[in-house]
Each structure stands twice: as structure tokens, then as C-alpha cells.
Image 1 (cartoon, rainbow, N blue to C red):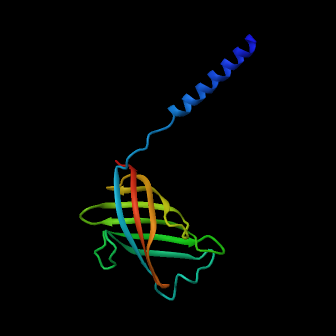
Image 2 (image 1 turned 60 degrees about the vertical axis):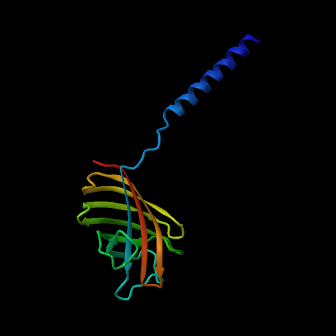
Image 3 (image 1 turned 135 degrees about the vertical axis):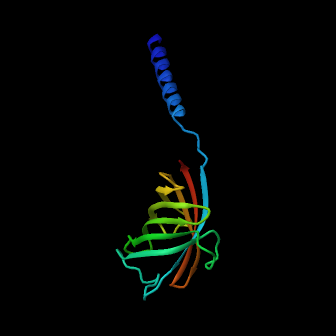
Length: 166
């Protein structure tokens, strides 16, 4: 009986130590050091349209980014980069682009990349760096389709949260 009690105490002690170490390693959720809400407007030209996607098709863009959802608002940045369709039987794309800021509010760039699972309501892309006001930053850009008009125009709302700011 004494041996069973010792083994039981050892197991409980071991369980307690593991639980404590796992709770101690949990980091508290950090607040973003900078947040941006931006709108990316994409107008397709030259015979391209959104309905005739092909697996592997590459689209290169240089489009305006605004602070509000109006296409004709003055841009605060340009989204320059590419996406390609990476699923054979549905709309999915992989994005890599730079937001190039040249406004009175911000100067510099933000580099964003990741999978755009278009069927989802919101998608998270990684902010993997930047320059100027965004030097070496990291964070998350949550995007959602704001407007989808026909096969020539769409607008994405980007909610950008930066967690490393220098």
C-alpha cells in the first residue's frame, strides 16, 4: 500500500509540474503597436477578367490603396505585386505585394504575403517587413472582400495590425 501511495504522489507531482510549466510558458496577448484600415481597389484591364481563372495564372498589379471605400478617394499608398491562382478547381490565390506609402501621414513600405482563400469571409496574410515608418515591422493583414462587381473590379478591405514597431 505504501508503494502505491508513493507512486500516486509521484504521478500527481509530475502532472502538477507539467501543468505549471505549460501555464508559465503562455504569453499574454499583445496589443498591436499600430493599426491601419485600408482599401485596395483592383480594376482588371486588357481582356482579363475574374471569371476566367486558370490554375497557375499570374496577375501582376499596381493598384491604388485608400483610407475609405471610395474608388476615387486620393490614394495613400499603392499595392504593387502579384498573385497567382493555386487551386485547380476553385478560386484560391497566393499574394505577395508591397504597400508603397508616399503620403503626408506615412512614408515607407509594408511587405505582405500569404494564401488568399477566397471563399472565406476573412483571410489573414502575413506582414513580413517594411521600410521607413514601418521599418522591420511584423503583423497580420486581415482582408475581406468589400465589393465584387462583375468580372472587372473588386475591392478588399485590409485591417492591418502591426505587432513589432521600431
